[in-house]
Length: 431
Ligand code: FAD
Image (cartoon, rainbow, N blue to C red; front, side, top):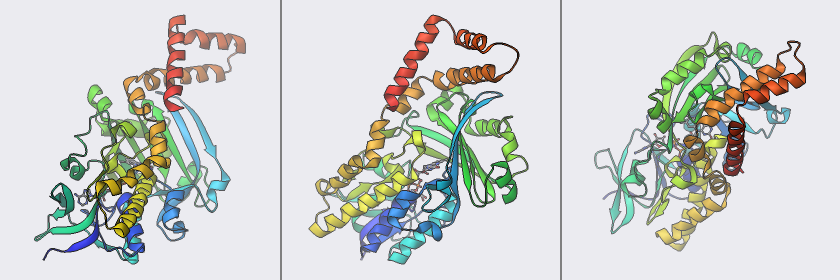
């Protein structure tokens, strides 16, 4: 007879493992299926992990987890060809308990987290691909895996299979995502001596630092590059909307090569050695691209449900929060003995009421707005850099004359009006 579980979770990323951990801790018989050799072996992240959501699941996790560095500084760089306007926040409070966020390497972190779920009683099966959901009379009753005799049954199946969720797609929950709903990202892990990292980024001890780099780093396409510090390596990467890459006939690795050799960024990575090269999609369609997340006997969590806040580069925390909400809803459904879509829909309601839904709604038009009008990155960032260069060059010109030059450099009255309009529109989609 085929095996039956209370819950089957597909995918041991942050969403799936959070769900499996919460269920197992409550005594539920849960199976966590991962296609990779081990959890994290196929997973990619820039690598900022947010403390709060993780700590709601495992208090004090950072004392034991393989985190790299607590981040004490976030720098934002508006990059042009040979210049950058940078602003940053550095806070010593972020370097102390309870910390704000950490850099992590997913291959290590996901493995550790899944092991915690196993310690709570979840059964983890690696190197197993879920091929499809098994349905009976329109309700999901299990999954078909690529193992011999690989049909497995459960009261609820949780789809935590990431951005491309073929499983949710095959249930008709979403269509193929459009190129303006996903970003394609590539990144490298670069080995570099710990002491050099600390000197180069002005860090003491374990402290870490992140750079988010806009503008020239993506050749004006909506997206960003990043440079994050690990203990003895750096993560450098670029992600840009697929639609922009197609339009400009650009390959993401070309952008990454450009970033690595850019005169402003090159000195930070000098002397490092490539350790890993990774590529992945990021769901950036936001609220308007969210698929159906609940059906009879099935719940969709994390990237599979498009839960990424691209503006704040938050994804792992949303994935974890959704995994926990799914687990809590399943626990209630179990008590009521009712796994219908109507009962499980509480998950969707809770998701939309909480920070995940609220943040996605807040920025519901932002991605599409900036994607549609690339001049924010293409034109306005160079303009800002030119203005800063002019203002800060001491050449005997009076400051009033400099102001006049900057103002004239912005363009005609019509162009100035257009910029004012654009800034207003940007404020409206971000407010
Ligand atoms: P995933 O992490 O993708 O996990 C899905 C899991 O399911 C994988 O382990 C996969 O192997 C498994 N799987 C898939 N299909 C099957 C199947 N059929 N059968 C069995 N197993 C399957 N977020 C942040 O918070 N901070 C960042 O700095 C950040 N940077 C990012 C940088 C990049 C380049 C990318 C790509 C993403 C970044 N994100 C970041 C987003 C974040 O990585 C995701 O939001 C998060 O990983 C989503 O978790 P998940 O569990 O839903 O999906």
